[in-house]
Structure formats: structure tokens, C-alpha cells
Picture 1 (cartoon, helix red, strand yellow):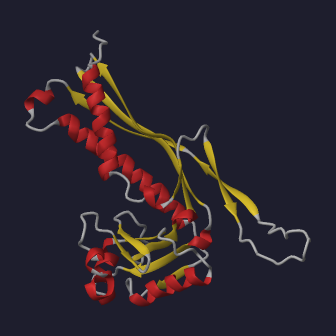
Picture 2: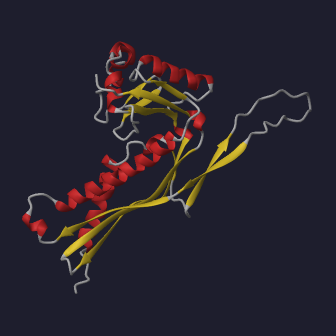
Picture 3: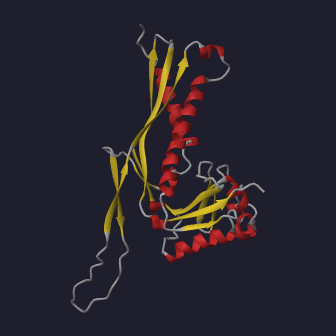
Length: 277
């Protein structure tokens, strides 16, 4: 039985999978706190409380803030996405089967990355804004904005809001979101192909994978980057092996990652009604 592997085929496939994952995989990975190259089955994210500044007398001791230190453990999970590439089938099709499977595998792993992050966000229950009779309204957005202000969540360009496509449509009906008179020419919602924009110091990202309950209430999340952790032990890797008995390559895409809620105070869950009119 033939056991040789076409090295050029493998190297090209690995590159295509990696590029596809970077291009069309996860939409949320860069919106959360990330640790790469984790060794072991779990990662630890440090959590530090607020400090208080005080005065001191002349030649007195500098007051200690006595910060509250804690940590959150993130368990890593292994994920796989594989398929067969038949040697002769490639000759019979007018598409690049290798590229199709590379893109499909990368997309599957990208969706899994986002699913882990969304599950972590969904564990937050401290701040919930919901109205079973309304979609995403300006009042809900401003209430979430006020919650962050009251809790001293930094307005440092690292605030994100992930919403459903129905809620994205709701935002497009708000003048303050779409009018250049409010947001300027460069921050209009159609100014780039990613369909994400900055508004109220927050990056708004539409996503198709947010949870929805039996009453058609979609959970959307307004959060700070440091509130959620994403740990990576192994980024997307590809293993290609030749199976002579099948006259085909088996392509296995895999990764080892995990996500965890670090500070639920940095997440506001916004419930939005999607009941058809």
C-alpha cells in the first residue's frame, strides 16, 4: 500500500486553511482578552479589583491599595473538522476541491471559536436589559451605555457589542447610527466590508450565532474586551494523510481553545424581540 505523502500538496493545504481561518473564521476572537501558546489543559486569567488612592503625612508610609486579586480558570477543548479528498475526483470536477474543504474546515473552526466566546458571554447575568415587546432600541443602547458609565468600565476603545442581524437592521433605522451628521463620513455602517462600525465609543458587530429562546428573544451582548478570556493552546493546524485503500487524502483540521467569563460586571446582556410582525 502506498504510504508516501505529497509534501507540496500538504504545505499548500495547510497554508490555505490558515489563510481561510484568518480571513473568514472567527469574528469575535479579537474582541476579547486572549492568551496564546498555552501549555497544559487549562489557562488562568488574572482578575484585579479596584484600587483607592489616599494621602500620606510627611515622611509617613505610602498607603497600600490592598487590591483584591483573584483568578479565573479557562478549560481548553480540542476540536476537529476533517474530510476526504479523492485523488481522481479532483480530476473530474471544475472546482478546487482542496480549497473548498480548506475553507469549509476553517469556517467550521471559526464558528466554534465564536461559539465558545458567545457561551462565555451568555454566562453573565449581573446586567440584563430586556423588553419582550421591543427589538434593539436607542433606549436599550443608552441604558447599556449608562450601566458601563456607572460601573466605571473604561471608555478606551475596547468596548464591543455583538448583535443579531435583525438588531443590525434595527440600528439602521436610528438616525444617530446611520447619519453622517452624527457619526461622520468614515464611520458610516457601510464604509467597510466587515459590516462593523464604531458608535458611542463601541464597535458594533452583527453575528448570526447569538442564542434565541422559545419566545423569539435574541440575546445580544455589550461588553468590554477584558471581561471575557480566550485561551489558545493550539491554533488551527492541518494534518493531511494519504490512504491508499481509499485512493484519497484525509484532511484533518484541528485546534485546542477555550473561553471563559472573567468579569460579568463588564458584560450587559440585551434581550431583543424578534417576533415576526
